[in-house]
Length: 309
Image 1 (tube, rainbow, N blue to C red):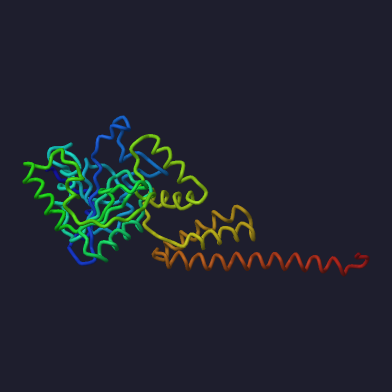
Image 2: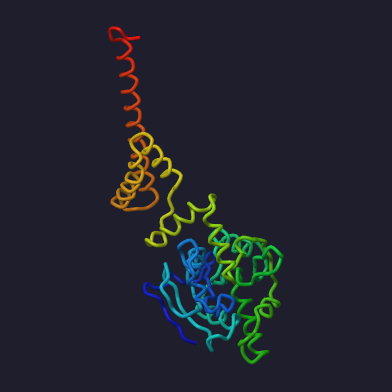
């Protein structure tokens, strides 16, 4: 088994009661996409792989089973042996780089997977005695590659399969999870995967709908700029609106840019952004009030001049 590490390392990987690791399988052949590099296909300006990595950003260690490639955040790289031996062998290779008592297992073609879904899986795993929690699709089918498992039972079943079949090459995932006590969580959106170009087109179309496009755009920009900052976008939008209405339309983008710059000068972080936005919003409101006051005074003065009316 060949192993790699991306520059910067994966971060802390010490086992702990509240920690989990993530294993992302990204080395398939994508035959239904004509052999295209599926993890590298972009949906909403981000690769499918980066979207999945964002969803499991809370992992102590993230292992991607695939050939190394640029990613938005550092991960460990490894490959199954032999390459192309199938998902069970790939999962085994990834699990060998994990030390946590819980592991989230994901495929790399989930455009709508979010961190809250990963937390939901882990919460369900911790709330009961099940050995794994898997998402189910709209038809109720298990999705073992959108799941959270206790590491020990997963290793137990991998060892059993390897012994029974003289290795793991070519084994289907259903044989692995058949020996586990599972809890199921329905989520038709998060379980949506991209197997065909029609699936890719549907995902690209959905994220451009009115209710999703802004969040998707902000996530794509943060990914592109390497920013992991979560801020109150509603407050920034209020600031942009008031600057546009109370000052001038071009004031909106320039003001929000200056807020970001000021927050960076102050050390960054959500609190710095909130404070800079608060000051700029107060200024925009004062500006608008002055303009309104000038208009009222001018109208009053015009009404008292000789001959007025």
